[in-house]
Length: 615
Image (cartoon, rainbow, N blue to C red; front, side, top):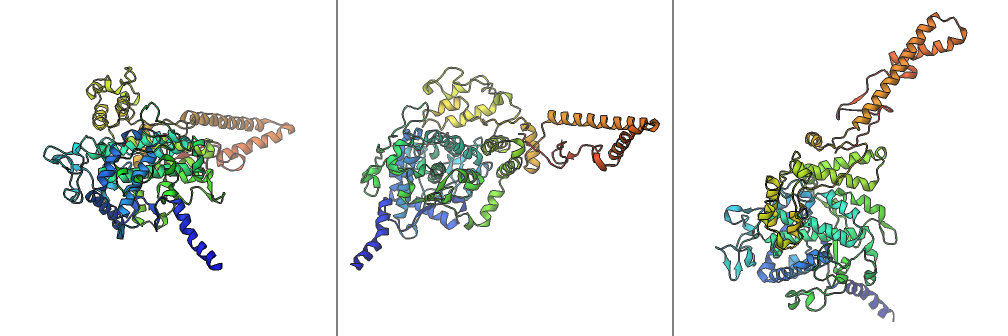
């Protein structure tokens, strides 16, 4: 009898394992930031990805993705891609040997925000920009034919083989597109406790890297066959990281998936605002996964894949390394304040969904991130505001929105990839025609040529160039032409203001170039008022003391003696800097760094308010 109990106990972990994942595996799928991995680890992804091209599995996954363009504009954006990535990850694991415990990495694109002309990603074995002299084909030997090729005929040029398609991987990197910075993404978390609103905003930002990597229709990242570019999986794995982090910080990961339909904020089965067709969104509706569901190596060939089944990443044996995004975004502070797990014993993220491996990172990773000027500025801005939070009387949440706004303005002014001009009143004041202003609401009624003739656009080189670059890659998604026409991608930044803060973006520019510190200034009108008032008080006190002294010299009244002694003491204090009036006659102390007056009430304390979208 005891032997039977032993046998049962021995098999219990296996039973539990089979009940919680869809594939028996000996190692977790711990997905890490690509830039933190060793070259050997990165090359494992490169070789595995290229093997999927050779054995035909990548083409089947790419064909399935291309058949589901509509899901990019609804609540299935995350989960459809979650399954695509899981199948690609599984296919690489099935290669065996060194690939047996392979986990899909993610590209934290926020580390490359501000470095668009020379992003870290392009130095990590996945190639860089294509060669414009040769149809933007990749120069990197690792990604040239015959080492790698695309099977999308629409991206083949006339001199390339089309039947069967055997054309080069192409990238045409934009010289006007920015990448989302870390605080822009962080603000999305705080502003959107509802799933659909969160998904809509993350979708909006995820399209920026697509725009960045393709300014023509023959670059794969501009097409339904974006899967053919190795960066595609890295990009979309980061969006899955974001969804998981959002869910765990709102404790939506604690919901029983069998009751998920009762929690509309955790999962909202709907199309994005103003979208009518977005494919499968129903919580138990199976995705159309043809032709993937026709091959026996896919899970879809033996079961329906639905949003409900994909909700809990633990069921799929997936974990994410928190990476540096967790702390650079300051979401660790926000999340640890609002979320607990394991019956309240663990603050912050779900330990079944996330691990923190940052202590294992090489020093070069930390140094590489520290060398990013935009990152330095964001960190400095955050620290300055936090140090003055009490004086400014602003909430923790408002600091996120303040840094989001200020860093956005810094980014558009300082990135070499921005054609934004602070002196361009047409762009800044949005004094240009849009589709909305012309009552055009059907994308089929507007062409690029018509957009370029709009008042304010045709005279503006930057606005015209943005529309030319973006329009060429917008044909895949019917919503994009109107967004482009309405200026949704025209370097717009959210506004933030505070009564004690003077926002001067131009001055901000000058100061930040020197030391990456905020250009902060005491509210000048208030500061001058305080100094004038203080000067008047000092003048009156000094005058009264002087008059009293002269008067006392001729006074013989005993009753006035105490007033004479007081007036002499005050005059002495004002002149020497000692006694009751210590320091009052000295010139106002000036902050040498900011050129602003310090607080009159306490000359040793300082208040430095801040001056200043589908694949």
